[in-house]
Amino acid sequence: MPYRVGDEGEIYILFGLESGFWEDFIGGYEKFDGGDLIETATREFHQETNCYFERDELRELIYKQRENVVEIKPKVYRFIIEIQNVNPSKIRSYELACVEGGEKEDWIWLKLSEIEKAINKSKTDLDVIVAYGIKKQSVTLDKKMKRGLLPNSETIKFLKSIQRKD
Image (cartoon, rainbow, N blue to C red; front, side, top):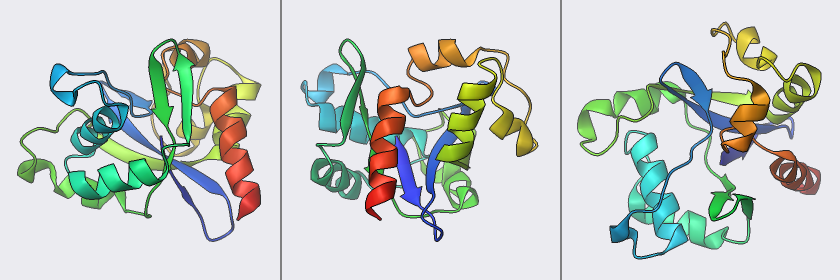
């Protein structure tokens, strides 16, 4: 889960649009990853951001922050990594240059506090995304959290602890 700290100290999480739904970045192990979780996370994030982030830089960034990992369900892990603030339009512009990407169609930064508020409030649609002028979700937040596509309570707790440090 890529995040950044805004000028006001607020945590922002990067989401990608896939098949009409805004989701976190998640992916599965491939044989060529050699059983290495860092390699899997590097490959998946590289692909799901149209190859905007270079693999070597990503691998180093994930390795340096490797203690920021949360098990979201058995054998499914979320790496929580701080990345630079990048305008989503720059990620979009890499589409033609990336032969291994194309899983996500668009990207958006959302405030952690707004995501948490939406999760606590409705459990049915992500009000924060509607506030950004994007269509409502048809999948419940509970289902998305169980699938690992939204931050769960452990992830939110972890990100809040980072926010307090800054």
